[in-house]
Image (tube, rainbow, N blue to C red):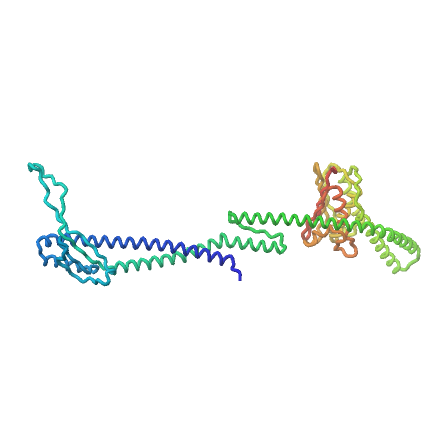
Length: 465
């Protein structure tokens, strides 16, 4: 079973914290014990010095009772267990207390010399009584045995105190450290992991948002840049593959359309003759209605063959000077004549002419297809707005309607050949033809849509390169 990143971080962090706290605890304990030992020795030296000063005169006078008295008074202290006085011949003059020879490690032996000062020398004439350095004479030594019980208890208490302080510090620092590491390191890395996982599953829109202002943020930004580059590259490859497939399909379609148009054209001509002959006959009301239906279907079929013919051929641009404003006005007027819905067309044109170089028939067909699509999209009494916005290098044409709008999933498909939502009435070639004719003029066409509004934007250069 693989350990998660968070568990690994916890393990490493706790080990580092543990080693650090142990090192600090050991150093603190060592220093504390050393200070206690120094204090213990200084205390012993002070007691021995004091005892030596008390027994100097009794030792000089040989008064053992006074020496014993001072010795017993000294042993009244709980940390002293034994005391003895040694003369200058290194013989024990007096001792008190009991010293366990077998457990000497439980005691600390401290000794101090018993010194006396000799008389200060005088100058030869006795005029100056200047005291020189007073020479000393050692007449004996005192030895004390201090119990280590209390110092050992202090050392033990110190060790326990250090242990609990280190344990508490380890616990608190570990919790705080893990929270900080989790927030600053683990969570960003896990977000990066989730982003990479989503990206690898095909979600190229996934963005990794890390704001740590360090290498992790740089890594996330680099990943996002890589994802955008890869997404763009894949999109370009798909577009190239799609273009190649479409070119191949168009070549096949061109061959088929030639045969289709020949055969269907002959059939349509025969149907036209039949319809003309039937129109001369004295038909019943039901027959007239059937003839009208036949005429509508015949018109629809003729429109389909015309669209196939337009789409299957590569548009050849024949340049001429075009007044785009007048062309759009003419198309809108023509559509208004055959409009049965009562659609209102609002226009926003500049006062002056809008002149471009292009193929009048191709541009007219493209605009007609887009406007027809807008007419089909609106309901009775709907509204269409046409706006022309010219500049020095290009002209932008906006065609909007207040229809029900285009579904988001269909926006990328509406310019594909044979894609239609109109049912039998639509061929699915109108917008594809418009796009092809606009692009033949090195322009482009785009669409935005929401419920209640669809806007087509056509951009056409004023002069072809």
